[in-house]
Image (cartoon, rainbow, N blue to C red; front, side, top):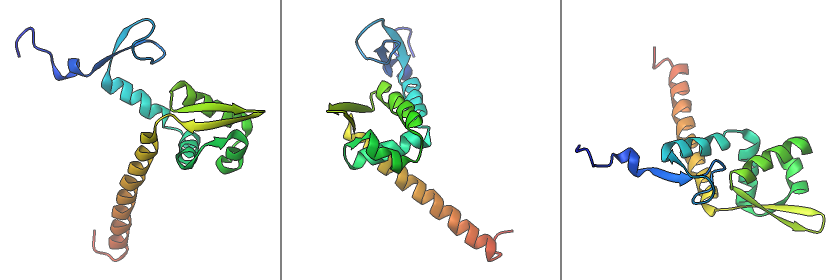
Length: 138
């Protein structure tokens, strides 16, 4: 590679501020793989995944989500704040109710893909377990 050539990593850089907003505020160069890691860290909590699954079906009010998620209101509020900060959900107020929805339909698709991957992994593990029980693997 010559001195002036860009590496593949250099092509995967975005200009973002410290809040993750592209193109606004103080500019810091962050590699795309680091942004992806932060994105997946945001998804790395069971309550947040459950909330996103619910919102994949339709918009929900906070009160509707509480019994479905099975956590205290303060905990749900905290997890919704994380999702809002990451720009994965948006809010709409109607009277005293706050409704949440996904910012991008691709989030629902990502959850469907993850379910498919996990199904395949679990099927493979179930086959291995059956083989072990039948004495086919030592």
